[in-house]
Length: 317
Image (cartoon, rainbow, N blue to C red; front, side, top):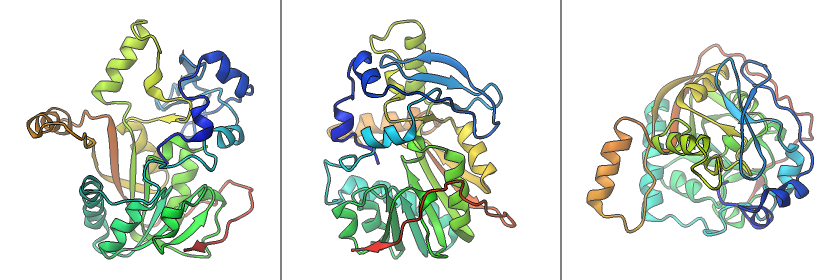
């Protein structure tokens, strides 16, 4: 769940007037942690409203287009990893996924059942299965790449799916949580699916990184032509820092064991320059990507999904 597809291409980087003609409705959003009305702090170049909770500091869109409209325009069938429909496991992906799985295994102490929420083209499912995990996945629309993995798959949003009592040793959200209607509800649903001793992996854009902070100051001072573009508000609804993401995970019944800001692979970047970036940004955890690894707390009472939608049934390749 990372690459804008056909519908969003019609709005991606388009002028504000075009966006507002397509997405005419707006609805207020309250902080899921504090249940407080947020304070507006900016409107981006496409007319999306950025707000911050005065209690916990969580940032999100409010008012925003209704989620059903966003699903129509942004998360439709064409939304997905279109550049890699087969879910190819490149050397860069193998290294990145291997790092994630090592961290997860350090928490679970085993390679059991793993649920990949927003499994996209299925590359991670392939990597985890090759390592010995029993893999399963969900996505709003299941891709052919995911189906070809042989994993157990469910279509739909996490809160709408009936997993038939299935539990998982690990649940993974890789650049999914920022797109959801309510991140706390998503994490609470994940906690209900995690078996005792299980783990949670989250990866989101890091609002606390050096680059986002610099771009925010440039936007405030009017130095950017497309102000607040780095929030990607057309398809990102929530904006996290290590502190706010930790609060969400803890409220949902997890204990954050580790967080880091790994740098993405850049093809063609000299090894010495990549090493310099890692030293400057990964070490002090100032990168633009935030990865969180959390353990399921004992004695937590799972919360029921707040969704009233009909449940989905599992599908397989």
